[in-house]
Picture (cartoon, rainbow, N blue to C red):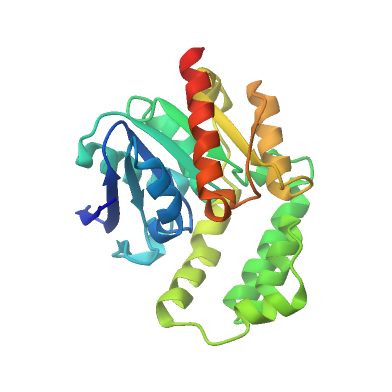
Length: 274
C-alpha cells in the first residue's frame, strides 16, 4: 500500500503527516510516538480505511517554531483538528495511545464533529488516581533526572513508575549509548513539556459522558497491574465505561499490529451494532 507524505503549515508549527489507503478516515496518534511507530499498524488498517498518521508537534519532522510553547493536550488536539479538516476525508475515527490517548480525549471534548468515534488506549491520566500527589512527585523526579543528563536514571524511574518490568541490562543497552541529536532533542522535549502536560491533564468528565456511546477506553491484555491500567480503569469508572482489552501491553499495536487491527475492527463494529 503506497504512502503519501506531506506537511501542514500552521502559524506556530509545521506538521508532518502521512496518508495510506482508501475508505473511512481513521487517525492514529501518539505522544511522543511518531508516524513511523504506527506504520505496520497503519498498513493493516489501510486495506479498508484511509489512515492518517502524524508526528506530534515538536517531535521528529513536526517542527514547532517556538519550542517553549510546549505540547499541551489542547494544542495537540487543535493540531489534529486542523489535519482532519485539511485532508478533507470527512469525520474521523481517532485512535490515540498513551499521550496520544490524552490528545484524542481532548479532541473528543473540543471537536466532536470531527471525531465522532474515539478509542483512547491507556491514557496516563495520573490526576485521576487516589495517590496523585505521590505520582506528581515521581514524575518530577524522573523529569529532573532526564533534564540534568541522567538518561538511564530517568528511564529507570519512568519504567518503575509505569509498573513495566525493565531489566537493568536492557536499560543500559537501550539508553546507555550515544544518541543522535534529533532523538535527543525529541526526548528532552518530551520530558520537559509533553510528558508532564499529558499526565497532569484533567478531562472534562461531563463532556466525555455525553460521548460514551462512541468512546472506547482500551487496556492491553498484558498491562495487568501497570500504571496505565489503573488510570484507564479510573476514567472508565467516572464515565461508566468498561474498558475493552486489546492484544499486548501498552504498545500492543506495535508488537501485534495484525491482531490489534482485528480487535479494533471488532470493537468499532460493536459500536455500529449498538
